[in-house]
Every structure is written in structure tokens, then in C-alpha cells.
Length: 248
Ligand code: ADP
Image (cartoon, rainbow, N blue to C red; front, side, top):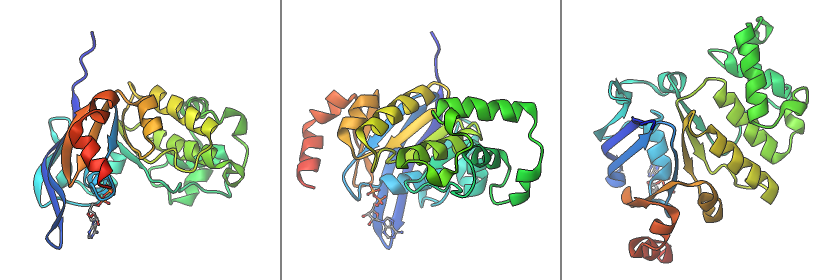
């Protein structure tokens, strides 16, 4: 029996924009290696929650800890990203003129914007890691292809691969299957499921069919706090959840 401790503690977090509470006493606990889906109607606070965890937005009140020791509110967005919390935005930030391999190579660098890292020799551990990630994201046979020539889904996987190069403990993924074909959606589900265990994966997603296909535990946000948590069946049959979604 492996007991996974809590890796992320979000407690009593409130964020106001001009008096409007985008997050209102939010409490969220993420276990090491778990795959958590966060759902909720538009304006529920999902994006603001990701902004708080990744250090983009500092809350008015509350605390955010990575493990029991690391106070994320004392760290910058950059430090948090470097320290083990990766975030995948909807729009990929891959380098289209470079090959898949070069994109992953660049992602091993301390600073992605430093072009000269491309001329550095990778050590064997880094090369091994790139091969490992290429297999994980299903792009091993496309390693020499220009990233710009990849399909929409493949670009998203490459972006995930670039985050994986930093071996994040926590991976935040915003609407991973938006715009994907059915086949790409299925592959993305497999990919995210394969990442759980090694990483804590937090997925914010609107596509309920997709959430059902991957989620063990679902958190429903509403008006900046947690409305309910549980399995997909539990939350979908919860009268509070039905009411909130009918009102959308
Ligand atoms: P979600 O991602 O669940 O749709 P958001 O976190 O984007 O929700 O937004 C929560 C609420 O906070 C929304 O009502 C939104 O209009 C408001 N909000 C978010 N960011 C800002 C901002 N920078 N300034 C003012 N209001 C904001």
C-alpha cells in the first residue's frame, strides 16, 4: 500500500477584482500522483485558481503550499514553474520552425528563451529523457519533423512533452482536448492517465465525456469555491451541481 501524501494545499484563498470575489475561501488539496479534474460553469474561478497555484495571481487572503514546507505565495511565477509546477495553456507555445526534437531539447534549458542553449551538448541523461518523453507523448517517429507541420493534437502533446522535460511534480492542464478529433481526444486521455502516478495532474476541462473518461475525482467550482467533490457519478447526480449547470 503506497500512501500518497498531499502535494498541494490551497487553503482559504480569496481573490478579489474590484470587490468581485473570483475566488471565495477556496480550499483544494491535491494528492501526490493523483489525476484531478476541475469543472464548473463559466466564471466559476477555474482560471483564477490556476493563476494562484502558478503564482501569476497572488491572493488577498489564504495560503498555498507545495508539500508542507514550501510557501508558494513567497515565490515568483518563474520560480514556481522552475520548481516543479508546470502549466499547459490552451494555446501551445512551441517553436514551429524547430523540429520536435529541438523543441524538447530547448525545454531542457533553464530558460527556454535562451537560443544558444541549442548549441550546447546535451548530456546522456538529457538525451535519454528526450527519448523517454518522445515515447510518452507518442511523437517518437516524428522527432525530426518541424513542429509547425504537426497536427493540432500532436502540437498539444509536444507542449505537454516540453513541460515533462522539467520533470514537474504537478502539471496543470487547461482544456487539453479543445479542438481535438475523437481519436486525438482518446490519445490525450491515455497520455494524461499515463502521467498520473508519476506526476499530480490537474485538468480543467469543459468536455464532460472526456472528464468521465479520465477522472477518478472531480472537483466542482462555483462562485469561487468548491461546490462539491467526488466521483463523476457522485457529482453529476448532486442536486447542487445540476442546479448550477441548469442555470448556466
Ligand atoms: P473560469 O475560468 O471558471 O471561467 P475565471 O477564473 O476566469 O473563471 O473568472 C472568475 C470571475 O472573475 C469571472 O467572473 C471573471 O469575470 C472575473 N475575473 C477574472 N479575472 C479578472 C480580472 N483580471 N479582472 C476582473 N475580473 C476578473
